[in-house]
Length: 138
Image (cartoon, rainbow, N blue to C red; front, side, top):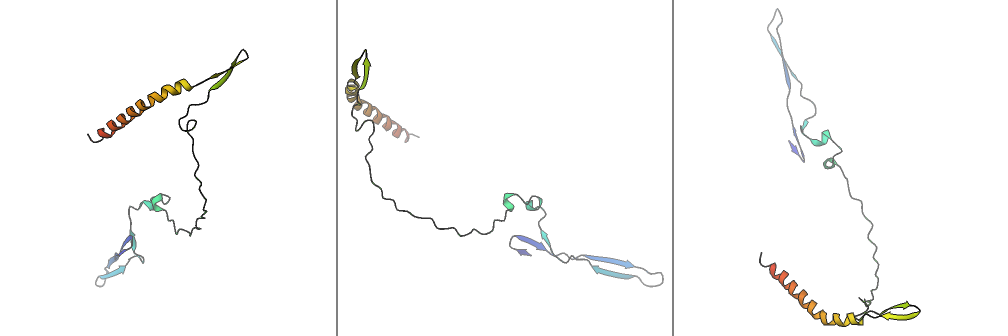
C-alpha cells in the first residue's frame, strides 16, 4: 500500500505445527503470527542512520513576518566636480626658497595636454572599435 512518501506492505506469517500422539491421528495446528502493525518499506533510509543530516530536517511552518517600513526620502541632484572642475588646469603649488615666494605652475603641462587630448581620444576610440570587431570574428 502506498501512502504519500512511504510504502507499506502486509505479510501474513503462519506457524504450522504437526503433533503426532502415540495413540491417535496426527494433528496440525496453524497459528497466525502476523505482526499487528504493517512494517514500513525503508531498508536503506539515510535518516534512520543519521537523523541530523540536512535532508532529514523538519522545518515546520514559516512565521508571518512584520511588513517592511517604508520611508520616502527626497532626492536633490548635486553637481559633482572631477579633477578641479570641468577639465581646468590645477592651481600652482606655492613654495619658498631663501625667503622668496615662488609658485610652480602647471599651465605648461595643461597646454601640452590640451593638444594631446584629441590624439588620446582617437587612440581610445580605435582600440574600442578593434575590441568590438574582434567579438564578431569568433
